[in-house]
Length: 349
Image (cartoon, rainbow, N blue to C red):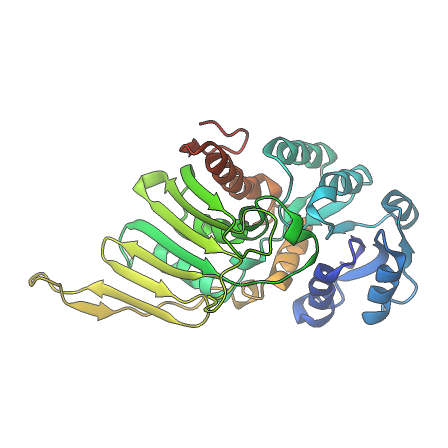
Protein backbone atom coordinates (compact mmCIF):
# COMPACT_ATOMS: atom_id res chain seq x y z
CA UNK A 1 0.00 0.00 0.00
CA UNK A 2 1.18 3.51 -0.81
CA UNK A 3 0.09 6.06 1.80
CA UNK A 4 -0.48 9.70 0.92
CA UNK A 5 0.71 12.20 3.52
CA UNK A 6 0.76 15.86 4.44
CA UNK A 7 3.71 17.06 6.48
CA UNK A 8 3.09 19.99 8.83
CA UNK A 9 6.13 21.90 10.09
CA UNK A 10 8.95 22.29 7.56
CA UNK A 11 11.76 23.43 9.86
CA UNK A 12 15.00 21.59 10.49
CA UNK A 13 13.31 18.60 12.15
CA UNK A 14 11.42 17.84 8.95
CA UNK A 15 14.67 16.97 7.20
CA UNK A 16 15.03 13.81 9.28
CA UNK A 17 11.49 12.72 8.45
CA UNK A 18 11.80 13.33 4.73
CA UNK A 19 15.28 11.80 4.54
CA UNK A 20 14.01 8.64 6.24
CA UNK A 21 11.17 8.35 3.72
CA UNK A 22 13.52 8.92 0.78
CA UNK A 23 16.63 7.00 1.80
CA UNK A 24 15.59 4.06 4.00
CA UNK A 25 14.90 1.00 1.79
CA UNK A 26 11.98 -0.41 3.84
CA UNK A 27 10.20 2.96 3.49
CA UNK A 28 10.92 3.77 -0.13
CA UNK A 29 7.75 3.90 -2.16
CA UNK A 30 5.45 3.50 0.86
CA UNK A 31 4.60 7.18 1.44
CA UNK A 32 3.85 9.88 -1.13
CA UNK A 33 3.96 13.45 0.18
CA UNK A 34 1.03 15.41 -1.27
CA UNK A 35 1.22 18.55 0.86
CA UNK A 36 3.53 20.68 2.98
CA UNK A 37 2.32 23.17 5.58
CA UNK A 38 4.34 25.84 7.34
CA UNK A 39 3.76 29.37 8.59
CA UNK A 40 6.71 30.40 6.40
CA UNK A 41 5.94 29.55 2.77
CA UNK A 42 9.56 30.08 1.74
CA UNK A 43 10.69 27.41 4.20
CA UNK A 44 8.12 24.94 2.89
CA UNK A 45 9.03 25.64 -0.73
CA UNK A 46 12.73 25.22 0.02
CA UNK A 47 12.07 21.88 1.70
CA UNK A 48 10.01 20.69 -1.30
CA UNK A 49 12.84 21.64 -3.64
CA UNK A 50 15.47 20.04 -1.41
CA UNK A 51 13.72 16.67 -1.51
CA UNK A 52 12.40 16.88 -5.06
CA UNK A 53 8.77 16.69 -4.03
CA UNK A 54 7.44 18.12 -7.27
CA UNK A 55 3.86 19.33 -7.50
CA UNK A 56 2.87 19.08 -3.85
CA UNK A 57 0.40 21.54 -2.38
CA UNK A 58 2.13 24.13 -0.21
CA UNK A 59 0.21 26.45 2.09
CA UNK A 60 0.13 28.04 5.53
CA UNK A 61 -3.41 26.72 6.18
CA UNK A 62 -3.39 23.11 7.40
CA UNK A 63 -7.15 22.70 7.16
CA UNK A 64 -7.13 23.87 3.53
CA UNK A 65 -4.38 21.43 2.58
CA UNK A 66 -6.05 18.51 4.34
CA UNK A 67 -9.38 19.34 2.67
CA UNK A 68 -7.84 19.57 -0.79
CA UNK A 69 -5.51 16.54 -0.63
CA UNK A 70 -7.48 14.12 1.60
CA UNK A 71 -4.31 12.31 2.78
CA UNK A 72 -4.09 9.01 4.64
CA UNK A 73 -1.48 10.40 7.04
CA UNK A 74 -0.58 13.61 8.79
CA UNK A 75 3.08 13.87 9.75
CA UNK A 76 3.21 16.37 12.63
CA UNK A 77 6.59 18.10 12.94
CA UNK A 78 5.38 21.42 14.37
CA UNK A 79 6.73 23.13 17.48
CA UNK A 80 5.28 21.70 20.73
CA UNK A 81 3.01 24.70 21.37
CA UNK A 82 1.13 24.03 18.11
CA UNK A 83 0.84 20.24 18.46
CA UNK A 84 -2.63 20.00 19.99
CA UNK A 85 -4.41 21.87 17.21
CA UNK A 86 -2.46 20.13 14.46
CA UNK A 87 -3.21 16.62 15.73
CA UNK A 88 -6.88 17.48 16.29
CA UNK A 89 -7.12 18.78 12.72
CA UNK A 90 -5.53 15.64 11.31
CA UNK A 91 -7.87 13.34 13.23
CA UNK A 92 -10.88 15.44 12.24
CA UNK A 93 -9.93 14.93 8.59
CA UNK A 94 -9.67 11.16 9.04
CA UNK A 95 -5.87 10.96 9.04
CA UNK A 96 -3.66 8.62 10.97
CA UNK A 97 -1.22 10.93 12.77
CA UNK A 98 2.46 10.50 13.64
CA UNK A 99 3.73 13.29 15.90
CA UNK A 100 7.06 14.59 17.07
CA UNK A 101 7.54 14.48 20.83
CA UNK A 102 6.36 15.58 23.29
CA UNK A 103 2.91 14.32 22.32
CA UNK A 104 1.11 17.05 24.29
CA UNK A 105 1.65 20.05 26.55
CA UNK A 106 -0.14 18.38 29.48
CA UNK A 107 -1.44 14.99 30.52
CA UNK A 108 -5.01 16.21 30.14
CA UNK A 109 -4.26 17.30 26.58
CA UNK A 110 -2.62 13.96 25.87
CA UNK A 111 -5.62 12.04 27.17
CA UNK A 112 -7.89 14.19 25.02
CA UNK A 113 -5.88 13.31 21.90
CA UNK A 114 -5.98 9.61 22.80
CA UNK A 115 -9.77 9.79 23.14
CA UNK A 116 -10.11 11.69 19.86
CA UNK A 117 -7.98 9.14 18.00
CA UNK A 118 -10.07 6.30 19.41
CA UNK A 119 -13.32 8.05 18.47
CA UNK A 120 -12.01 8.65 14.94
CA UNK A 121 -10.79 5.07 14.60
CA UNK A 122 -7.36 6.33 13.63
CA UNK A 123 -3.83 5.59 14.82
CA UNK A 124 -2.00 8.32 16.71
CA UNK A 125 1.64 7.61 17.54
CA UNK A 126 4.71 9.52 18.67
CA UNK A 127 8.26 9.56 17.33
CA UNK A 128 10.25 8.01 20.19
CA UNK A 129 13.08 7.17 17.82
CA UNK A 130 15.67 6.59 20.54
CA UNK A 131 14.11 3.26 21.53
CA UNK A 132 14.59 2.15 17.92
CA UNK A 133 18.37 1.97 18.05
CA UNK A 134 20.52 -1.11 18.31
CA UNK A 135 21.88 -0.46 21.81
CA UNK A 136 18.48 -0.04 23.43
CA UNK A 137 17.04 -3.10 21.69
CA UNK A 138 20.08 -5.16 22.71
CA UNK A 139 19.81 -4.10 26.36
CA UNK A 140 16.10 -4.92 26.43
CA UNK A 141 16.86 -8.38 25.04
CA UNK A 142 19.63 -8.96 27.60
CA UNK A 143 17.38 -7.94 30.49
CA UNK A 144 14.56 -10.15 29.23
CA UNK A 145 16.96 -13.11 29.03
CA UNK A 146 17.52 -12.98 32.80
CA UNK A 147 21.30 -13.10 32.36
CA UNK A 148 21.73 -10.12 34.73
CA UNK A 149 19.25 -11.57 37.19
CA UNK A 150 16.49 -9.39 38.56
CA UNK A 151 17.09 -5.75 37.60
CA UNK A 152 17.47 -3.54 40.67
CA UNK A 153 18.71 -0.20 39.30
CA UNK A 154 19.35 1.82 36.17
CA UNK A 155 21.71 4.81 36.28
CA UNK A 156 21.95 7.24 33.41
CA UNK A 157 24.20 10.25 32.71
CA UNK A 158 23.37 12.68 29.90
CA UNK A 159 25.74 15.64 29.55
CA UNK A 160 25.81 17.55 26.26
CA UNK A 161 26.61 21.18 25.43
CA UNK A 162 24.02 21.71 22.70
CA UNK A 163 23.62 25.12 21.03
CA UNK A 164 20.38 24.85 19.05
CA UNK A 165 19.21 28.42 18.89
CA UNK A 166 15.51 28.84 18.18
CA UNK A 167 12.53 27.82 20.30
CA UNK A 168 14.38 25.41 22.61
CA UNK A 169 16.45 28.18 24.12
CA UNK A 170 13.24 29.96 25.14
CA UNK A 171 11.38 26.91 26.56
CA UNK A 172 10.59 26.26 30.19
CA UNK A 173 11.80 22.87 31.50
CA UNK A 174 13.73 22.47 28.28
CA UNK A 175 15.83 19.45 29.22
CA UNK A 176 13.04 17.45 30.84
CA UNK A 177 10.38 18.25 28.28
CA UNK A 178 12.32 18.28 25.02
CA UNK A 179 15.15 15.77 25.56
CA UNK A 180 14.81 13.73 28.74
CA UNK A 181 11.61 12.15 27.47
CA UNK A 182 13.78 10.12 25.06
CA UNK A 183 15.93 8.82 27.91
CA UNK A 184 13.02 8.24 30.27
CA UNK A 185 11.12 6.36 27.56
CA UNK A 186 14.20 4.21 26.91
CA UNK A 187 14.53 3.43 30.62
CA UNK A 188 10.88 2.41 30.85
CA UNK A 189 11.24 0.26 27.74
CA UNK A 190 14.47 -1.42 28.83
CA UNK A 191 13.36 -2.09 32.41
CA UNK A 192 9.99 -3.44 31.32
CA UNK A 193 8.30 -2.21 34.53
CA UNK A 194 6.09 0.79 35.22
CA UNK A 195 7.27 4.01 36.92
CA UNK A 196 5.56 4.85 40.23
CA UNK A 197 7.07 8.03 41.68
CA UNK A 198 9.85 10.59 41.27
CA UNK A 199 11.86 13.16 43.19
CA UNK A 200 13.52 15.74 40.94
CA UNK A 201 15.81 18.75 41.33
CA UNK A 202 15.84 20.96 38.23
CA UNK A 203 18.05 24.02 37.70
CA UNK A 204 19.51 26.35 35.12
CA UNK A 205 23.27 26.39 35.79
CA UNK A 206 25.43 29.50 35.69
CA UNK A 207 26.47 30.18 32.13
CA UNK A 208 23.43 28.43 30.65
CA UNK A 209 22.30 29.80 27.29
CA UNK A 210 18.80 28.40 27.89
CA UNK A 211 16.02 30.39 29.52
CA UNK A 212 14.98 27.68 31.99
CA UNK A 213 15.67 24.18 33.21
CA UNK A 214 18.75 23.13 31.25
CA UNK A 215 19.80 20.59 33.92
CA UNK A 216 18.03 18.07 36.14
CA UNK A 217 18.69 15.26 38.61
CA UNK A 218 15.84 12.81 39.18
CA UNK A 219 15.29 9.60 41.14
CA UNK A 220 12.46 7.48 39.75
CA UNK A 221 10.86 4.60 41.62
CA UNK A 222 9.66 1.78 39.36
CA UNK A 223 7.58 -1.29 40.14
CA UNK A 224 9.33 -4.37 41.55
CA UNK A 225 11.74 -2.22 43.57
CA UNK A 226 13.65 -0.91 40.54
CA UNK A 227 15.28 2.53 40.93
CA UNK A 228 16.18 4.73 37.96
CA UNK A 229 18.63 7.59 38.54
CA UNK A 230 18.78 10.28 35.85
CA UNK A 231 21.43 13.02 35.76
CA UNK A 232 21.40 15.39 32.83
CA UNK A 233 22.40 18.74 31.41
CA UNK A 234 22.10 20.44 28.03
CA UNK A 235 24.65 23.11 28.94
CA UNK A 236 27.57 20.93 30.07
CA UNK A 237 30.59 21.90 27.99
CA UNK A 238 33.83 19.98 27.65
CA UNK A 239 32.99 16.27 27.81
CA UNK A 240 29.86 15.31 25.91
CA UNK A 241 28.28 11.95 26.52
CA UNK A 242 26.53 10.19 23.67
CA UNK A 243 23.09 11.55 22.76
CA UNK A 244 21.85 8.20 24.07
CA UNK A 245 23.57 8.92 27.44
CA UNK A 246 25.91 6.65 29.44
CA UNK A 247 24.26 3.81 31.37
CA UNK A 248 24.93 1.45 34.27
CA UNK A 249 22.28 -1.26 34.68
CA UNK A 250 22.52 -3.43 37.77
CA UNK A 251 20.95 -6.83 38.35
CA UNK A 252 21.18 -9.41 41.09
CA UNK A 253 23.73 -11.40 39.04
CA UNK A 254 25.84 -8.63 37.52
CA UNK A 255 26.13 -5.27 35.80
CA UNK A 256 25.96 -3.88 32.28
CA UNK A 257 27.76 -0.69 31.21
CA UNK A 258 26.79 1.05 27.96
CA UNK A 259 28.40 4.21 26.63
CA UNK A 260 25.41 5.03 24.43
CA UNK A 261 27.24 4.02 21.28
CA UNK A 262 28.90 0.67 20.51
CA UNK A 263 30.66 0.25 23.85
CA UNK A 264 29.21 -2.52 26.01
CA UNK A 265 30.72 -4.16 29.06
CA UNK A 266 28.75 -6.75 30.98
CA UNK A 267 29.96 -9.04 33.75
CA UNK A 268 28.18 -11.50 36.01
CA UNK A 269 29.28 -13.17 39.23
CA UNK A 270 30.72 -16.63 38.64
CA UNK A 271 32.34 -17.37 42.02
CA UNK A 272 30.96 -17.79 45.53
CA UNK A 273 33.89 -16.77 47.73
CA UNK A 274 36.28 -13.88 48.33
CA UNK A 275 35.83 -10.23 49.29
CA UNK A 276 35.10 -9.43 45.63
CA UNK A 277 33.46 -12.30 43.82
CA UNK A 278 34.97 -13.65 40.61
CA UNK A 279 33.36 -12.21 37.48
CA UNK A 280 32.79 -13.56 33.99
CA UNK A 281 32.23 -11.40 30.90
CA UNK A 282 28.77 -11.59 29.39
CA UNK A 283 27.98 -11.16 25.70
CA UNK A 284 25.27 -8.63 24.94
CA UNK A 285 23.00 -10.24 22.34
CA UNK A 286 22.30 -8.71 18.97
CA UNK A 287 18.83 -7.31 18.30
CA UNK A 288 16.20 -9.84 17.26
CA UNK A 289 15.08 -7.67 14.33
CA UNK A 290 17.64 -5.41 12.64
CA UNK A 291 14.78 -3.55 10.93
CA UNK A 292 13.89 -2.12 14.35
CA UNK A 293 17.27 -0.40 14.81
CA UNK A 294 17.18 2.44 12.29
CA UNK A 295 15.88 5.12 14.62
CA UNK A 296 13.54 7.54 12.91
CA UNK A 297 13.01 5.34 9.88
CA UNK A 298 12.08 2.38 12.07
CA UNK A 299 9.49 4.43 13.96
CA UNK A 300 7.82 5.44 10.70
CA UNK A 301 7.98 1.89 9.31
CA UNK A 302 6.46 0.51 12.51
CA UNK A 303 3.69 3.11 12.30
CA UNK A 304 2.85 2.10 8.72
CA UNK A 305 3.03 -1.61 9.52
CA UNK A 306 0.66 -1.15 12.45
CA UNK A 307 -1.90 0.65 10.28
CA UNK A 308 -1.75 -2.07 7.64
CA UNK A 309 -2.00 -4.84 10.23
CA UNK A 310 -4.76 -3.21 12.28
CA UNK A 311 -2.80 -3.10 15.55
CA UNK A 312 -1.40 -0.38 17.83
CA UNK A 313 2.17 0.69 16.99
CA UNK A 314 4.85 0.37 19.66
CA UNK A 315 4.88 4.12 20.22
CA UNK A 316 1.10 4.61 20.16
CA UNK A 317 0.03 7.66 22.13
CA UNK A 318 -1.87 5.43 24.55
CA UNK A 319 1.47 3.92 25.60
CA UNK A 320 3.66 6.98 25.09
CA UNK A 321 1.66 9.02 27.57
CA UNK A 322 3.25 6.85 30.29
CA UNK A 323 6.64 8.32 29.36
CA UNK A 324 5.12 11.80 29.17
CA UNK A 325 3.72 11.24 32.67
CA UNK A 326 7.27 10.64 33.91
CA UNK A 327 8.30 14.02 32.49
CA UNK A 328 5.40 15.96 33.98
CA UNK A 329 5.79 14.24 37.35
CA UNK A 330 9.48 15.23 37.36
CA UNK A 331 8.54 18.82 36.53
CA UNK A 332 5.90 18.82 39.28
CA UNK A 333 8.44 17.45 41.76
CA UNK A 334 10.99 20.09 40.78
CA UNK A 335 8.42 22.83 41.34
CA UNK A 336 7.16 21.51 44.66
CA UNK A 337 10.40 20.09 46.07
CA UNK A 338 8.44 16.95 46.94
CA UNK A 339 8.24 13.33 45.83
CA UNK A 340 5.46 13.04 43.25
CA UNK A 341 3.42 10.00 42.23
CA UNK A 342 3.28 9.12 38.54
CA UNK A 343 0.05 8.37 36.69
CA UNK A 344 -0.87 8.79 33.04
CA UNK A 345 -4.04 10.75 33.84
CA UNK A 346 -3.00 13.00 36.69
CA UNK A 347 0.02 13.81 38.81
CA UNK A 348 -0.43 13.96 42.58
CA UNK A 349 2.02 14.66 45.38
